[in-house]
Image (cartoon, rainbow, N blue to C red; front, side, top):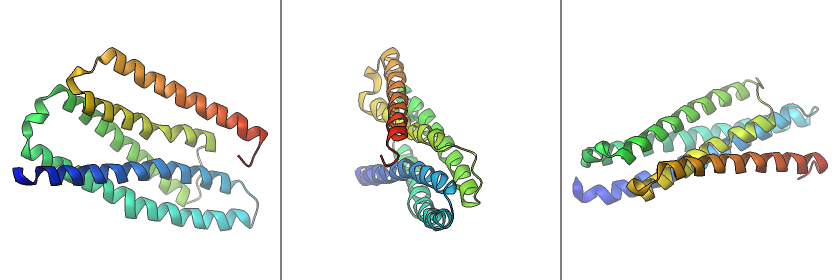
Amino acid sequence: MLEYYNYIKALHLIFVITWFAGLFYMPRLFVYQIEAFHKASPEKEILGKQLKLMAKRLWFIITWPSAILATLFAICLLFIHPIFLELPWMQVKLVFVLLLFVYHIKSHQIYKQLQMDVVKWTSNQMRIWNEGSTIILFSVIFLVIVRDAVNWIFGVVGIVSLSIALMLGIKLYKRIRSKNPDA
């Protein structure tokens, strides 16, 4: 099985990338669905129907299968090299992966609500929600690449700084949009 390690690792990375692609785009579709929900007829129904179809296809053809396959290939990698489970950086990475699954499952709940025309979030709240996967991605990539050389204080400060920058970007975008609704 060791001779297949790099192939399994490549497949794991491919499905992690497609999983994140789905998690990045899905909340954008949620934003559009929420905004369409507040439009007048017939635009509301036309957009709503199309966006629901797009969300369904993205969620069940790309995002969920990618999550499952990324996880299966990760388990195979850990089966080949179980020593990784003893490394501190891997333990922290697995905590972030757990957070990613929590984010994914919460996004699934939002997906189901929007499919039934239940709107509990504003489009601005959904824009903020959209940044959750970005923060997890940055955390995992830096953790995996830097590993044991990570200075945890700088890492935490970096993630907090990224989060603040993302929130400021969202506020700036909201301000620009209020002045120009077509932006």
